[in-house]
Length: 249
Ligand SMILES: NC(=O)c1ccc[n+]([C@@H]2O[C@H](COP(=O)([O-])OP(=O)(O)OC[C@H]3O[C@@H](n4cnc5c(N)ncnc54)[C@H](OP(=O)(O)O)[C@@H]3O)[C@@H](O)[C@H]2O)c1
Image (cartoon, rainbow, N blue to C red; front, top):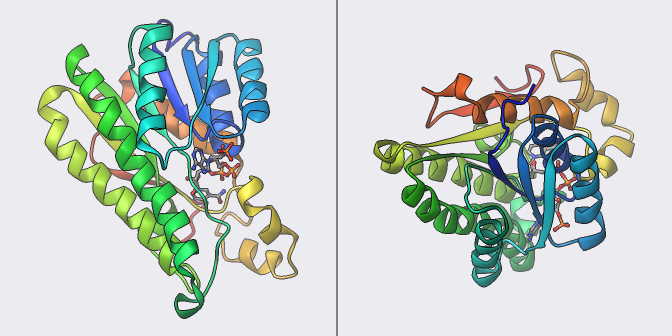
């Protein structure tokens, strides 16, 4: 089980949902996990859960939209754990669903700054450390909306297509440096982000459109992240990996 013993993993958006599930799974496999997010209480809860699962963990308060905070996040990882082997750039916002002409500039900025700029900034500070070390793995959380789209998703979908594109570009640029970069593309997953949607009357219709006829669990996405981060995926880079119960494939 100790596939990640001695490995240092950074998880952004680790205070809930998919990020928390991934931190715990890395912990179960013996990793040292740096949990980054804005909410301190929830981030520290993930730290406790990760430790309970068998790993080491620390929290670093970070807003991924702000360069100085992302730089600090990576610096703190190196200061506390001495290296950075795996980064799961997962922080994102998605609850904003609006028709294109009703999307405000504030909505656009929040989604694009968190989902796209946040991933770019994270890689901008993570890659130099990996170059210095001689390699690493980066997994960016995009979405099924990063490879397909739907009504009222124009800005979210645009931001996630950008995550897939920057992941492929980084994989192309840094493959020769032994850095693998991939994107994961989850469909509908049961997290805080989709809570409101799941409570709505048309939630059954959403589920009906998923071939496996159910919502995904954050742990199921985390399992894919674990595999992509592991040595078992040593020849895998540049791809966008859909995990959607068969939706939009
Ligand atoms: N749930 C789905 O159906 C689904 C489907 C496809 C893709 N995704 C993607 O999966 C990722 C995780 O979402 P989730 O479903 O697990 O929802 P979630 O439980 O709401 O988690 C979102 C995480 O992102 C963090 N975050 C948001 N803005 C941030 C910022 N500016 N700086 C740092 N951290 C920030 C949040 O932490 P703080 O609020 O504490 O900062 C939280 O930990 C997102 O990128 C999302 O787009 C989700």
